[in-house]
Image (cartoon, rainbow, N blue to C red):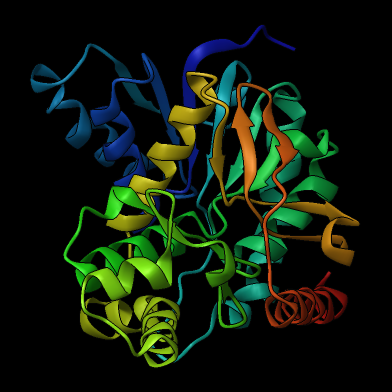
Length: 315
């Protein structure tokens, strides 16, 4: 196997999400080399050319279309390939189609690269993260999904709007499935260390239950709303991919709600879903304990059970 280039990334899949992610990664300045791979080689070549033409306004970088052999020395391999979510379709509806696609993609990647990090972005991301870990044979810490990083950003954005504050000062996360059974972990939410309900009251909001339910529903339905209006979601997830790659390449030890295989935490075993984790150069470096109410804990287990049922049928 080739020695890894610490500043090389491969993006597998050049649809809306893959192309937007490649553009966001070019803008980030994190990498000096990026290879784009797609079943439609001409599409990959077109995207590589289009993104490369912006390099005079960014940092020097080599961007090109390639084949699976070109992932051999990539430090991070971002997998966005898969069928997209259609209007009215849930992420879990995609599962059989995309597991089939992964059965051809992941072994090809593993044939050439066994030392990099596999970042799974295609949906349903939790099921596909589990499938990628099993199909690749990579250590589990180096196979994880974008999970609820985007859902969490949506939650912070909506809370920031609700409270008329900078969303970066909001500390809250979505856990569980990246999908319909996701949970807003309100019990541990705060604004710069101030419990969320206390801060809401400081800002003149007192109907906590109603607001929490409304905001959580809006987060959960965000993708459906965007897909209905413009056909696909890609900018938000592209920024999430960029954020995760920053944590990896800079070895930031950032705490992000990525999707990884659980082993007994909160009574959940042998399924991938999102919980806050320390993310650095070696991937997922450890789980972060999070305070949950009994109701949230119960909902998290139900989310895991939902994913297990789907996995049993599809993989």
